[in-house]
Amino acid sequence: MTIQVGIVGATGYTALEVARLLLSHPEATLVAATSRADAGKPLSAVHPSLSGRCDVVIETLDADEIAKKCDVVMCCLPHGASAETCKQLVEAGTRVVDFSADFRLSNRELYEKWYGVTHPWPERIGKTPYGLPEFYADEIRSSDLVANPGCYPTSVILPLQPLLHSDMIEATDIIVDSKSGVSGAGRSPKLGTLYCEVNDSIAAYGVGSHRHQPEMVDILHRAAGTLPSILFTPHLTPMDRGILSTIYVKPKTDAGGGKVHAKQLIETWQKRYRDCPFLVPTDALPATKHVAGTNYVHMTARDAADRIVIVCAIDNLTKGASGAAIQNMNVMFGVNEGLGL
Ligand SMILES: NC(=O)C1=CN([C@@H]2O[C@H](COP(=O)(O)OP(=O)(O)OC[C@H]3O[C@@H](n4cnc5c(N)ncnc54)[C@H](OP(=O)(O)O)[C@@H]3O)[C@@H](O)[C@H]2O)C=CC1
Ligand SMILES: CC(=O)N[C@@H](CCC(=O)OP(=O)(O)O)C(=O)O
Image (cartoon, rainbow, N blue to C red; front, side, top):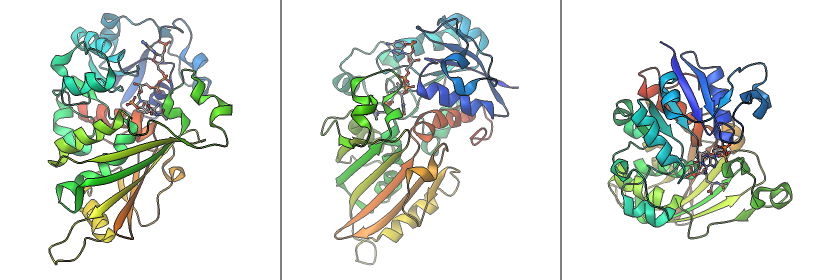
């Protein structure tokens, strides 16, 4: 059986990355794409890199029509707009991977506090698996809706979960400094992502107020069983794609009475992620170029003063969004989780 895939919100960057990955997926194919602004156009007219390789024509979203054609829909809409569409698609009988933040958090109050909107399908908040198959493969496999993770949280949760779970670091003293490429802000035009605003420059934003901070805390609480305290500062950097997160943690005392060392963190990742094909503890310091266009996550640790500094690199569009979604789809349909990646 070939998995029939649809993309809703097909004109954006994550949609293009899904289409690109599906071109080389041996057991899935793109059969439908929707957008409000570009219905009627070939998808390749909106994403010229697909020219000659994709004959899908963009249509207006009709959940029943899409559900007839698709086994699964990649819902690539902005948060706030996504939840209602996911509801319609699931009720029409197709399975959905939601790229937005609308179903990631554990409860409605937390979502409405951070996103400032009333949730249209609160029954599914806290009951939708968070799309990290490294932790939630069983739930993902049987679900009709999966909450694909945020890009920054992916680069922070994956290194920290095993360390908090094993009580190797102080949960209450974690500082995260992340840098993202501009594609992380999406393709819809905005002042802050114009060439002259971002070129030759690097800037912090969302200091003390970014909505990915509660996502990191909430998911780590759930996945590691400890409530961490995280100070998170994102930065916009003049590159197309990639996220580099530098994470400053305080080591706890180990069984021998000394402080935990960076080497022990790396050994813990090696053990915990032995069966996770995309998670790679490295000796070298990770760089966004090392993972560009791939679903890999590179992570390492170094002893530094009284802290351990963890560095993690992902591609925001691949493991940070569309690669993770393909990985989730593979798990949902019982094929090898690395297919097409
Ligand atoms: N870019 C990234 O690195 C990451 C993105 N994400 C999330 O993935 C989702 C898609 O992101 P991305 O592809 O970057 O976004 P883009 O801005 O590039 O594309 C968004 C798409 O949604 C449609 N859209 C925009 N506004 C609305 C609306 N109000 N109602 C319905 N449709 C709308 C647009 O098409 P049209 O207006 O024609 O309908 C477009 O196809 C977002 O939720 C984002 O937060 C998650 C992780 C990483
Ligand atoms: C560089 C940049 O602007 N990044 C986006 C986050 C990326 C993302 O899409 O996250 P969600 O899926 O949670 O919306 C931001 O800071 O809002």
